[in-house]
Length: 114
Length: 114
Figure: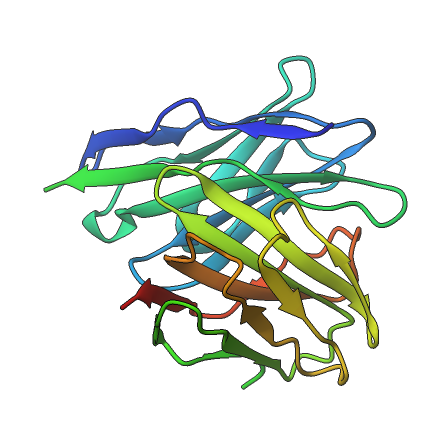
């Protein structure tokens, strides 16, 4: 069975500092990995995805994520955090081949402190 | 603009009552999904549909029912058998299940018990 772990319920970072939100995954085949962001009382918005190729993936709003196959991780990063980045972040995983369901992590609340 | 529309935004259910949540998409996507979101538990899949007139149970289907009579529409009924329906319900769609394309989400319906 596939699984996604986000080990931190909440991450606090000062505005202007770099941020990292952690994600590890377990899937049976070649992974497809996603990051989404959710603002209060809204749906999830897609940020970026990894399918194949470069391990560093760039996405929306200055976010990027690093894929590490040996550590089965896909951490979300941003060089300089903004207060407006404060939101709930979800990592999700599926894998290639057939009709595979997407598994979501439990979410990490990012709080950027002015 | 293409997207997913969920209605109503807020819904209240009386004991013993069935209620139906609407989800409409104009993205021409084949696959549609219903998720339940509870604090600290991430997204849990209720039902999904890969194509019109076909749908499959997800991880927590008990007490819920769906239909997929049109490609654009995937309504969810929360039946009286669902004893703890209070949650935030999210509808999503994708080009088809199992691809490397991200899911697109509506802005959710918050269901509460009267």
